[in-house]
Length: 438
View 1 (cartoon, rainbow, N blue to C red):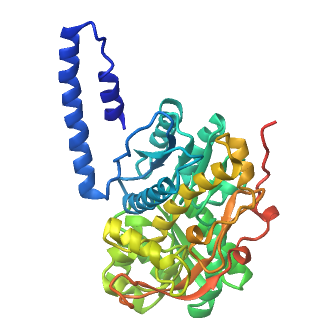
View 2 (view 1 turned 90 degrees about the vertical axis):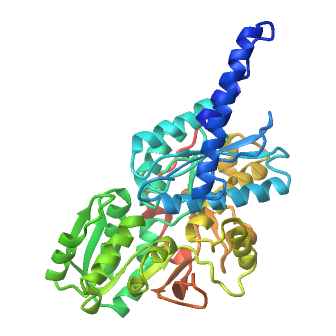
View 3 (view 1 turned 90 degrees about the horizontal axis):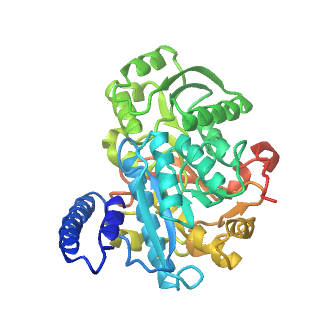
């Protein structure tokens, strides 16, 4: 981090200047204290987020530019936990190309594209990372992709869903682990139509992710004979959803479709149940996350949704071991976000070791069509990066939220596992027209 870099610089004093050396030592000790205090404070919030393994001159560097504060802090921290576990496993298996790997972490914040871009440039230009990871926020992921493409750095997006990342704005160097919004829409729409009805009202976050998820659901719903009876765009960080809920109620839909995420999802669903809307309408949506369900009271854990990965998968090889490793590390079960961070970090190692190189073009070529090993994919049908689009094609988990399951943190009942290739559409439909460097 910045303080660490300053501390390193402070130790580079001239040996023939004793007075300067004493002064520099004092400054360095003060800086060391700052680093230790900062690290201690961060440990209270999330398991070892900024603790980096001992630096080696030839270490391979992975830079994570993701939210650790704001609306998406919880999901960002869980992606970080997945990255850390993958890093430990990669180093235990000999690192990348026989070199140790370290993780450098920057807080992008939850919604400031300028900050995310600044941190991406810092990681690439000053810290000289070999790989860039991020972002949870789709708009920030798109902005970061412009930087990584300009600099020619392999970039893996763990959790920014808007279609354009691997669609109309695709780049040869940018790969994505989470689903596209159209994949989620295609996976969940049949269950929503069947279980709830055809008249939908949307409550949508006003940025790239929300726009494309609503568009995808409208498209899938219309194809199944459904209609939109209304919609509202809500600012990121909204705390009072009452005006939107009153409008939704007046439209008399079959389904109120919640597309908000993070703290916004918690606030919206909690208030909807407080207003008694769950007694009159089906409250549901596209993407749902364990982080949000954990933050809700039991009576608000309702509705039909799609999960991108779920921890309770009896009989699927390696899942139990992954769950145990994360619980040992964090004290809680992994979420889909934990899995996304884990897969993203392993993708860096698979790319480099597959290409036998750290040259970005060679690594990107090695990932074309690559199938993840079972111990990384952690799902029934595996997962692969679709060539020509750089989009991971995994399973999707459709089902309904539940107040209590087989364990206190079993808050989602999977009723159908949808094959990613069935939800993804064709490469041509994605809109990606990828160009490669000469």
